[in-house]
Structures are given as C-alpha cells and as structure tokens.
Length: 359
Figure 1: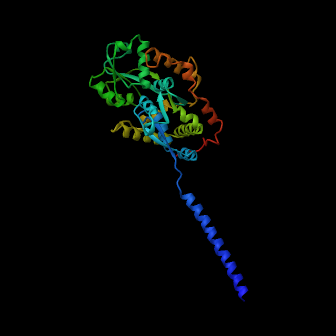
Figure 2: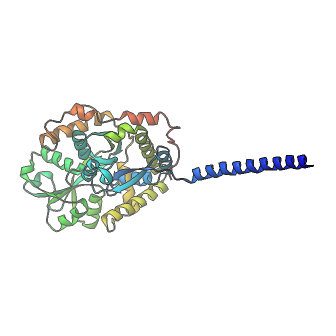
Figure 3: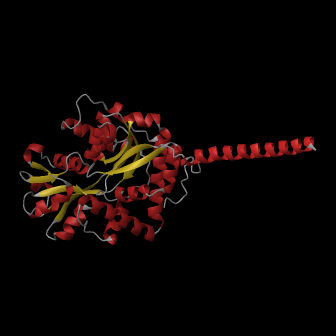
C-alpha cells in the first residue's frame, strides 16, 4: 500500500512539475512577446507647400506597408516638414536629433547637394511647373533693374537664374530679394517687389487672391528623393522600401478621382499646418496642379541624368554663377545618382509589395 501511494505521489509530482515547466516556458515566451522592440528613428524631411510631392508624401506618411517593412529592418520614420529644399539640405548636414537621413528637393537643391555632400539620389518625385509672376510687367526683359523675390536654394531660384541668363540679364542687373514662399504674393501686392519666382501652389494661389497678377514666364522643374550617404550604404533595403512606398503612393493617387480628391485634401491640411493659415485652394484647384506635376515614372531618365541632361546643365550654370564650388566635378556628382535602385524595386513587385494599397 505504501509503495502504491509512493507511486501515485511520484506520478502526481511529475505531472505538477511538468505543468510548472510548461507554464514557466510559456510565461517566458509571453514575456518575450510583450517586450517592445527598440526601433531606430529615421528622419525624413519633406515639403508640404510643394504641390505634387506634398500629395505623394502625405500618402507615404500613411503607408501601413512602409511602416511594416521598416519595422522588420528595426526602423521607424519621423516625418519633418520644411519650407524648401535648401532647408532640407541644411538639416541633412546636421548631426544627432537635428539631422535627417532622407530628404527631397527640386533641381537646384539636388544639384547643390550632389556637388557638396555625401548623398545618394535615387528617384524622381516631381515634374511640375515653376512660374515668374508679376503685376506691372509682361515680359522677363522688362524686369531688368527691378526687384525679384525668390526662395534661396530652391528649384525656382535656379529657374529664375536660368531665365535671367537666357534674357541676357545678370544678377547684378536686378535686385534679388530673398523671401519665404508664402510671403511672396503679399510682398508683390505691396510693391515691395516687382515679380517673384515660385513653384506651385503659390502662383495659382497668388493669382486667385490678386487678380491683377499675371504669369509672365514658366518652365518645368524636377524633384528628387535622396538619402545621406553613410545611411544609404548601410541600409540599401530602406531606400528600396522608400521607393516602393513612393510607387504605391502614385498608383493610389492615380487610381481614381476619389483618391485624388482625398490626397489633395490631406496635402492642403498639411500645407495649412506648416503655413499657419489657410492655404486658400479648393480640392479641385489642388487636383489640377497635382495632375500636371505627377511624374510618369520615378526612374531618373537619361534626359535628367546624362552628360547633356538637365542636371548636368544646372550643375554647370550654378558653377558659373558661383553656387557650386569651382572644384566640383560633374562625373563625381553624377556618381551619387543611384537610379538603378528603382529598377531593382520594379523587378521585384512581390517582394516590395507594389500592388498593395498604402492606406
């Protein structure tokens, strides 16, 4: 009887111990699952007052797939708004919490950044318009000796310099007045300047609010996404997932009128928040500008990239004007344009989840 009781007790003890081991193991697993993974924060500088790119980045900011893929890489994105590309580039050079890993900028900021910094430019994000707006003058030639507003280091800055040069007007022949883009229309109305050069939506907004204003010259601009060189080299997959997110965003915007309206609304809200007052455009007005500026392809084509392309032309002009160091060499700057990354993403649509809806 005693032996029988001992056997029963032994079996019970084994069951209890096994149970304790099971719960302990599962408790450990449960604790492991509940411990949050520390994600490294990556800063992305974007421009809510740049129509087209603003709509794209608003979708990217909401892209749940991008969040998931970055989490797999141990990363998370902090989106930081800026007024213009030159400001993005300043932050790109900063260290610590003030610095950026990703940014976007127009022609001149991109040309400047590849001439001066260790970066990788990897995709096209805009192909919209820039304008010179005036109230009392009808041609660029009439602006000789006048005051012209511009945003230093922006795509509209380059466009203005190029346009003046084409009209045989040097910087010394005019007074260039450095202004933030939102303040330009009122400065023109107050006769503080005689014209200004800006990207959308400022020209459309200016003419809407001040009917006496007129567009006297226009041109196409291009915009690009880029990353800090050391980060790009250490995290190539992060760049590819940013490219994938951009592709998803453009597809989403182009899919339907409803999506276009929705994203324009998001972009208007973001622009209003940065400006600190109403942007002053309806969704329909914003839609029209966005549709004109979305890139047909985000691949940096030969017309931008080749030795005879737009970026080379800008590089040489800015070098002549002293905006790019005389020691800068185009072949070295061009090597920082990593356009093959877009092809790698497009060739792996399943891996980079290109067909998924971002929101």
